[in-house]
Structure formats: structure tokens, C-alpha cells
Length: 282
Ligand code: HEC
Ligand code: HEC
Image 1 (cartoon, rainbow, N blue to C red):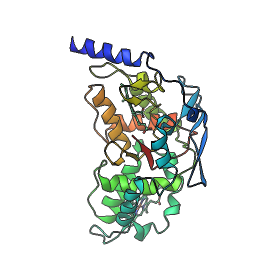
Image 2 (cartoon, rainbow, N blue to C red):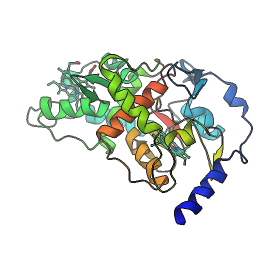
Image 3 (cartoon, rainbow, N blue to C red):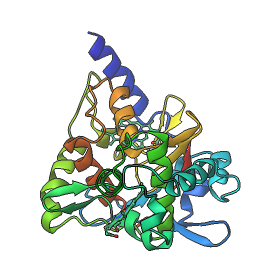
Image 4 (cartoon, rainbow, N blue to C red):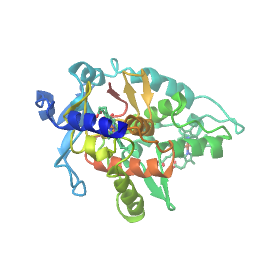
């Protein structure tokens, strides 16, 4: 009974009856950050994304005020955390007595990394968090960071922003294929009491209002993302978890094979958009 009632309520919200007309911003395909870094926020969908003609950054769906915060690093609240990330990067930790910077002197060498992640290596999906923790554990003799911790999201943002403006270019073939297929399947699977798939909201209803929020395509080119709602940087898989909770489903664990496959698949749906990290959302 409850399930039915909830489902009806959500269907109503998603019916399109409350759809708003596209705002002028949605015809924008490129924005400039700091008046110098061009960011593609809208482009043709990759051929394997059957349900979309165009892919659009979440930036396009936010209010003008929220959008403005991302256009200049002085206004972007993420940079408080990027600064913390820099301190952590220079901090000696662990039994080897090393900092990240001891081995990675030039942050610029990480350019392109975010754009290509997750990737598949030796039959395993590798995310940014995996790479960072691998260095902490195996090269520094330090404790791994929790994926959703401020340390992890801050250092992740610092490394990710070295790719800012570069096109997302995640591999979907070869070794990556089976993981991509698994991610795709999850994306279209209905979960939870509300019996909804990611696609029901982010593919079939983007642009429509759900409660007070405007649905985007659920792209992940902006992660880690600063959210005004919780005033911190958010890990991409924490966002997946939040969406699953909202549809009253038992979420997969952050770092699980399911969420890693979903991350790979979602990243590939954004191939061609620019890396926007660290982005600002509501
Ligand atoms: C003892 C030296 C050492 C330390 C300390 C170290 N790393 Fe690394 N790191 C490496 C080596 C070696 C590699 C693998 C070779 C490569 O791809 O650059 C690597 C790879 C990486 C990669 C993947 C690069 C890629 O293109 O695939 C990331 C990201 C990274 N490290 C981040 C960090 C962070 C963050 C820290 C601190 C928490 C850190 N590393 C500490 C040596 C180190
Ligand atoms: C009931 C509708 C609904 C479903 C189903 C849903 N989401 Fe969302 N999601 C939202 C809303 C609302 C937001 C916040 C507004 C926006 O960015 O779309 C959001 C935001 C996101 C974002 C952040 C986008 C950005 O630009 O920062 C991601 C990523 C995301 N969802 C992924 C998922 C994934 C993965 C699934 C399936 C496991 C899923 N969502 C299922 C409603 C939904």
C-alpha cells in the first residue's frame, strides 16, 4: 500500500506536468572558468548512450546564483578544501616518512588522469580513490583514507582539477567492456520501494522538477562536487548512495563492485563533456 502510494506520488512529480521551460542557460554549450578555462557543458551524446541525443553538465540545471559560484575559483567554496588537500599532499605521514609531494613534485603530471577514470587494469576497476589509497598504504606505510572523508575528497579534488577543461574520455571497450555492461545494467534496473531506475529520473526526466529540485542528467564530470546543502566536497559514490536512499532502496556500499561499475558507466555517459572538478551544486 505504502509502496503504491509513494510510487504514485513520484510518478505524478515525474509526469512532466510540472516541467519548466528550458532556461536560456540551457542553450549554452561552453562556459569559461576564471575567464580562461573553457568547459564544454553540452555536446553530442556518445553513440552508446541510446536514450540521449545530447549530454549536458549538471551545471546547466542549477540556479544562476549556484552557476556563478563555479565560474571563478575565488567564489567557488570548494577551494577551501582544495587548499586543505594541498596541505595534506605536502604532509609527511606513515612509516616510510614520506609525503605525496616527495614523489609527486609536479601536480601538473596528473593532468588527464581524472578524465580517464575509472579505468580497468588487470581485471579490476581502478578509481581515483583506489590510486590514492594504494600510494598511502603501499608507498607511504600510512592508513588508507575513507572514500567519503574530507581528506580523500580534498586530495581527490586537487588531483582532479589538474584535468579541468579536458574532455572526459573513459574507455568502454577491451578489458573495460564487462564492467561497463554491468554498470549499464545497474543504471536501468529499478530499485527500492519507489521502484525507480537511475534512468527514470536522469534520462527520461531531466529538466523536470522533483519536489524543489531540478533534475539533471546525473553526469559525474564535476566530482568531487561542493554541495551547498552540506557545505562540503562530496564523493561521487556518496551521491549514488544518496539517490538510492531517496528512492528508498538499500544502497550498495561506497567502494563496492556495483558502485565502481556504475561509476565507470556513468563517466562514459559524459565522454565529451569537460572535467569540471571541483564543481558547485545545490
Ligand atoms: C614513495 C613514492 C610515492 C608516494 C609517497 C606517493 N606516491 Fe603516488 N605514485 C607513486 C608511483 C611510483 C606511482 C605509479 C607510477 C605512476 O603512475 O606515476 C604513483 C601513482 C599515483 C597516482 C596514479 C597516477 C596515474 O597516472 O595513474 C596517483 C593519483 C597518486 N600516485 C597519488 C598519490 C597521493 C595522493 C599520494 C599521497 C597520499 C601519493 N601518491 C604518494 C609514488 C608515490
Ligand atoms: C527519484 C529520482 C532520482 C533517481 C531514481 C535517481 N536520482 Fe540521482 N538525483 C536526483 C535529484 C533530484 C538530484 C539533484 C538534482 C540533479 O542534479 O539532478 C540527483 C543528483 C544526482 C547526481 C549529481 C549530478 C551532479 O551534477 O552533481 C548524480 C551523479 C546522480 N544523481 C546519480 C544517480 C544514480 C547513479 C542513480 C541510480 C542509482 C540516481 N541518481 C537515481 C534524483 C534521482
